[in-house]
Image 1 (tube, rainbow, N blue to C red):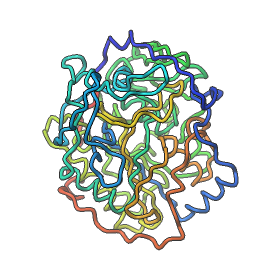
Image 2 (cartoon, one colour):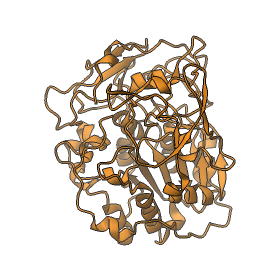
Image 3 (cartoon, one colour):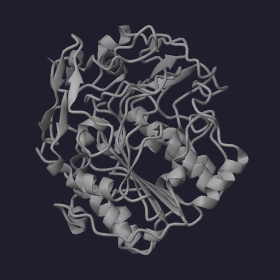
Length: 460
C-alpha cells in the first residue's frame, strides 16, 4: 500500500567514511576492497565446474524471523523496543499479518542515530497494513522451526549466511530490481525507492504511474521519478549475459493485470526486455517451468525463480497456508536429482525484511537508501562446506559479483564493485556432497498441478 506520510519522511543525510560517491551509480565506493584481476581469475578457476546458477527469491523475512534459534548462527530470541525495554520474541506461525516494509518503516525500525548507526529499536513504532494498526510487539516474532523444516534442513546440509544485507531499505519492487541491476540509480544523484504509484508495476502500468526517488542528499522525492519502464545507465545483468552468450531465464508467475506476475517480475519494468523479443523467449511463465526445464535438460546457465503468492513466504495469505518451504524444497530436489546437481549453485534468499525484527544493524550507510536490513540466504551446492555458517559481510551485490566472475561477464559497476563475492564459499577441490532429498509436505507434482495464481498479495 502507499502511505502518504512517507512524503514527509526525508532520509537523514549521512556521510560514510568508507568512500565517496561512485560515478553514475548513486551509491558509495566499495565498503570492502575490490577484487583484483588476479583474484577474479582465481575465483573463476575455483568455481569452474559451476556452469549453472539458480536464484530462488522468496519474500519478506528478516534473518531473525526465520533463523533466530539456528545453532551457531547470529540470531536472537530477544528484541529491543523504542523505550529501551527488552522483550522475548514470540514463536509464531509462518502465516501472519503483513507489516509495513517501505523506506519510511526502514528508517523507523532502524532508529538512525547522529553517529550514523542504527539502534534497531523502532520496530514497535511501525504499522501493520498501511496505517491501520500500530505494530507494537507484533514484529518481535520468529517462525516456529517446525513450519519451515526444509529451510533448516538446507541450512544444516549446506551454507547459511547470517550477515547478508538487502541493497536498499525498501520493499519488493526495489529488491527485485537490485537483484538484476545491483541498485536502482537512474543517474548519478537519484535512485528509485519504494513502490510505483499504482499497483500495476512495469511497462504496462497506467500512463500516469510514477516512481519515487531518494537523492544522495537524503531527500525523498515522492512520485517524482520516471514511469516504471526503465533503462538503467549501467544496464542490468541481462545486458552482460547477452553480450557474452550466457543463457538465462526469469521464471515467474503469469503476468496479467494486478497479479504477482506484475508485482515481482523485475524485467517487466525493463524497457528492453518487456518491449523486446526476450519477453517471449526468456521470461518463462508460469514459474513451475523451472521444474519441467530441469527434467527435460533445458536449464539455462542463469535462472531467477519467482514464487506464486501462496508459495512465497509472504506473511499474509488469503488461504491461511504458505507452501513456500515445500516449493523451495521441490525446486532444489528437482535439480538435485538431475544431471545438473554437480554443476549448479543454488542461492535461496528472501527479498526484504518484511517489517520483522532483526537485531543486527546495517553494516554501513550509502547514499541510495541502503544498506537495508539482514535477510536469510542459503547457498546450496555440492562444493560448499557442509553445515557451515558464513559470517562474512555480504549484500545482494555479492550475488551479482559472483555471477559476473563465474561467467567472466565484466562488471555492471554498481554495488557489485563494492561487494564481496560469495565465490569464496565454494571449493572444487573437495569431494562433491552427494545430494539427499529435502523432505517436504508438498510434492513436485503438487506444484505442477497448481493452476495459475493471479492473487496480488504484496503491495510493498
